[in-house]
Image (cartoon, rainbow over all chains, first blue to last red):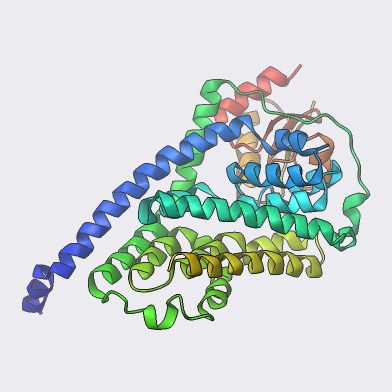
Length: 309
Length: 80
């Protein structure tokens, strides 16, 4: 047993795994702290109430673009998803524009971006942001064109209010304090997933032969993309652990487009989100929403499998 | 005078309710903190980020969970 352990430790694969693990986790945690903190400070200047003011009275297409970009800095949280949706619709922001925001907000989030940047490099992170934005804009425009306001729960259009938007009065020291508190709360939530994800990734990195998965999930396997999207839907809360695993799988032959589709499905389509939206939307609308976004993600996957061959 | 916490029932909302209760108690105010789950009330105040801390029906903080000391300070500033 001990002999075997010594043998294992002396292997280059073991050293490669440990090296990969230590280097990656340190890099990820440092970046997470910096990026989440900075985005939280920026966010304290742009709360949803202010974003709503930006979006009211915009023409539809500009609205979709702005809503998607603003969605990047706003986290999708169970606390605020419903009031945010109600607030947007009540203020007269078109349904399509609201959906652009709802797609971009969870899909392009700071934890995913830090992980993509540290593990895949800035090119893939940028690719992810740009395709995410395009999917959010396009899905919103399509949903807007379908004229399906009747699929939103009936009580929503009844209440109208004209009260002025409330915006927190915060000093700089308040902003920094809140940003730091938020950063810590996110870290507390994601660190076990990251450690497990990077740890498993490190083992695969060291021990699984390169191209091992090419046979099953290479670019020429057409069914890999839709499967990746389906598998991604139930994994939302583990996004932080999934991305490190996926990065290693791409080394072992999983095509980049397929990997991107999978990660987008993990972040943008989630069962808990659907349950929250169920309170304000009819099931048909949620399915339509998931369908449009899912098709957009699959299209992106095929496109990049084709381009990045 | 009344103090309200408006929330959707999420963990942060409950936390704010709890801390606000403690804050009011430590200030020695004999006031019940009200917990309101009606999202329309928050929207009517012009707020979309929950939880909301409100005094006399007027929001003083939205979408943030501050420290107990900060809540005490906010309450004192807004009670007139």
